[in-house]
Length: 365
Image (cartoon, rainbow, N blue to C red; front, top):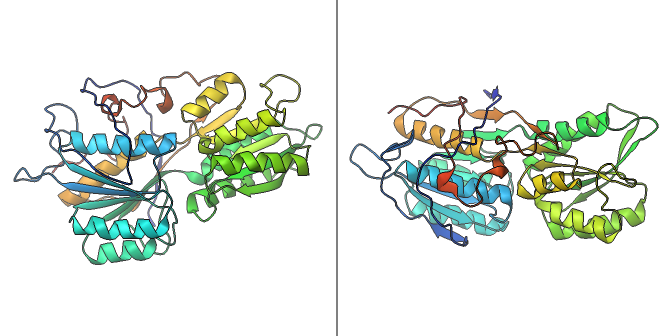
C-alpha cells in the first residue's frame, strides 16, 4: 500500500464566509443545498459540467464526541461550500443499522461514499457491495479491514499512542515508576488497536513503566467512570492514566474526583493523565491542570484532504490509497495556540477556514 506521511500545518485564520446555526443531529440527516459560494478554494468544485451538484453520503458511527461533531459538520460545510449535496447517516454504534444505512445511501445514487465505521471488519461486506455497484468509497480516521477502500485518510493512530507513551516515560523514572491504567476505546476498531499498539511500543522500552489494567470502554464515558472506581480499588498505586480519547474524559475526571484523586498537576497526589484528540474538553483539562498532555487528532486537516481526494476521483485525477498526518503534542505550553482546532469558534463550522495543508491540494478539473 502506498503511504504518504507529511506534517500538515493548520491555520486557525477564520475565513470571511457566512455562518449557520447547526441543528441537533439526527440518525439520518439530509444536507440542505446551498448556493455555490463565489469565493474560496472550493467554490463550484462539487458541481458537474452541467451545473448538477455532486452528492456525498457520509456513514458514521456517532456525532456525540467533540471530534466527530467537528469532523462531520466540517465535512458537510466544505462540501456545501463547493456546491455539492451532503447526506449523513449516524448509526450510534449500531453495526446492523450502519450496514442498512449503506443500502439506504446507495438508493440515493451518491457520487461518493465516506465512512467512519463502528467496526472496521464488520463494515467490509457493505463496502464490497457498494464498490461492486460502482460507488467509490473513502474512509476517514478509522479504516476498513477486509476490503480495500479507494483511499483512507487519518492522523497516524499508532503515533498518537506512541506520543502519549513517550510523555509518560519522559515524566517517570526508576524512583518514580509509572503504574498505568489504560482506558481503551472500542478494541474491535483498528484505530483503538493502533493507539494501544503505539503506546505499548513506547512504554515497553522501559523497566519503570507498566500497564497494570486495561478497560475496553467501547468509547463510553460512563464505562470509563465505572472503570476508574474498580481500577483504584484493585490497584491503589495507579499513578498514570492513558485514555484513547478525550471522549471518555468526562467519566475519567469525574471518576477521579469521586475517588478523591482529582489533583492538579504540581500538587501532591496528582495522577498523570495523557489522552488523544485535544478536543475542547481535553484543552480545558490541560488548562485546569487535570490533564498533562494530549496527542492532537485534528479533525479539520483529514476532512480537507479527503474532500480534495473525493473531488479528484470525480475529476479522474490520480491520488494515493492512503494519506497519514503526523501528530502534534499539546501541553500547558501550547494549549492556547491558534493552531489548536478546539480553539476555533464552537459550532461555527462555516466560519472555519479551509485547512491550510499541502498533503493533497484542491484538484483542477
